[in-house]
Length: 147
Length: 389
Image (cartoon, rainbow over all chains, first blue to last red; front, side, top):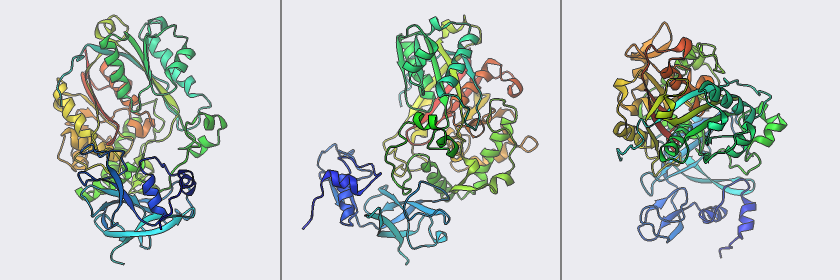
């Protein structure tokens, strides 16, 4: 049974995250360790970040649906300094990648890569979804498919 | 893109002034810096505050600035988002439409508490920094300034170039800034200095980003007719564009060949009476070095990915700077990399000074036409063509 957390509790579970009416289901999905992105029920197109309507066909029938989380690194950077975050130590440059997801050309999701040497994190490398925690709540990340 | 351009050459920039910029806490408020630049430009143009009937700038708000300067009454004002071509373009449109006749355009660059550790220690700056206590997401984002680092990684990957191509932009800027007393950073920079500098967000280093500064620029925008009667030579606005495409989030932008800059370039070419072969001075934005390379690619100086090679081909090794076809300098004031985060107010001010013939040691002989391509890729690509009347 899926327990539906309240909007109030959702905001408390993800401090600092820019939660809106349009991406709340994405964050509820995180609590179940499911990566949900908005998809149009009329034309089937995916959209990220979350939009209130379908920017392609203007349908308002947009729902958050799970993606596989498989994809290819499209952009890769390494932060030598950055905002304070629990579990992030910039003494080893922290990788941040935009991953082009398998579901649709141009559909990207940005996060970090875990469990890999920075030298193995490069544009073109295939990745899959993994999960860690931030402030006690699940956070979607990527790991290299070659592992 | 529509080529319609009803205000072409009908509106002029009558003057431009600056306080100069410093990469340290000035001990002054943003309003104080902006007021200094505004008073100077009003006086240099030979007008009074009673002549000003429009205000358009970044910070402080038009209401605060009007109160500070004691401007009796305005009939139009606005505070559009940065970068600053927006403010000149919007002011020009307001003048052309008849909402007002003389607009004071201003920008206050100010070291904010979120982008400088020493600014954070200044209690007044903490109060003056909007959104300082807002919730912020963690490091797993490409949003805001990080986006240019992300696309730098893509630029290197797609075109097979190295960081040295970014370094050429940084070296060129500093070599030019040596002759600009308004610049915050005036020490020459070598390619070795660049390549050994600390990484901030790899693949970009300390010298790939504009520094946080205190300082202000101000402009008078009015009808071409009225500008002819003022103290300085009028600089006519030939065309102005703000370009944006649908996929304008940093990590969703389609490609290096499909973003706001392409809208700006195509539209400017359609609206403007002159293009790159006709200009005397060139101002590609340089808040981050990869932005500059992309502007050079997209303006048509060279093929996509060849901006670094283009700069090398037009490099003056003695002066350690680019001089296109031996005559066109690139950001002769040193750009934002040397003046700091002017949000292109510095590029426009230098263009006005070059076209007015008052650029001092940096003067390009008989400069008549300038191209300014301001801002980045996503929601801030802007363009402006200016020429001497």
